[in-house]
Length: 372
Image (tube, one colour):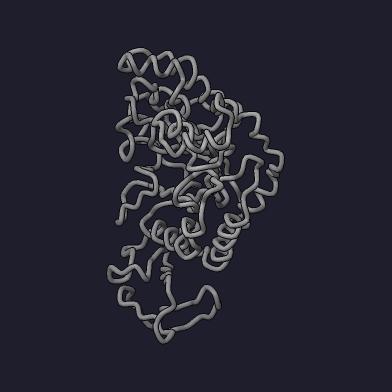
């Protein structure tokens, strides 16, 4: 499976409140309030970086497409570029990270839109070709050798060693929670782990968990509910529309432009979601300039308009007359109208807000204050 990480660009976090004890069942675990920092953050950066960054071709599912599906294009790629007996493990020595500059990454992510960074980890429950997993799968998941000997010890170790603020679980779809021991792990995470008061998790913990159980809901990659949800959710998207990991064969028309990124962000936040934007670094640890340019452009937009995004809440109406040109967010008594295209004749007409003589209108860019 693809490995990766993520960083949530967050506002300051207030002191945590003492939490009740949670039992290892979904009724109890789902009742845990989501730590406030996550909803306040709104914008995050996803990083897919691993051995798949060595072939850097097709997608981060390179190993599966090559040796799981035996796709002709992947087999042809290997025949043309690597020795006949090459294995996926042979890529590992070439995953050098020679040019990895973590402080520069952090600086880039701050410039992409936040002053504070919270640290999260991606973790895949399954491994496509692990013999222990394949044996458990063959038994109909009646045995748990892979879970007990590999994936759960690894997950506990990640929490104890790195103390992440967020765990982005994946690889859940083939087996039930009773196989993965998901509820036992989450009960420990919420009750006894060193991050019990601040950690946030997603919903990918079993084959029927997505959009039903866990912390915030992912539901599916690039999920767009198209309406306001009662439960906190997230849209994860990627600048490269065809891959989460870096690939050398990407073309400019396969990348999201800045306007599309901003549109996804605004719509997501208006519907009460968080936006997680992905980049895939090279095997050397370089975030290529085109990805940097997109992140920096998002940051410039947020420098001006971030007040309408960070720590905002959905308003009573999410869009102007069911169009996709004007979107609303709110913060206390303040309502923000975010228009994605410049209005005709430079006149913005809003029919949803009800103005009064005391109403004040301000342009975030110009900082002009107008009275009705």
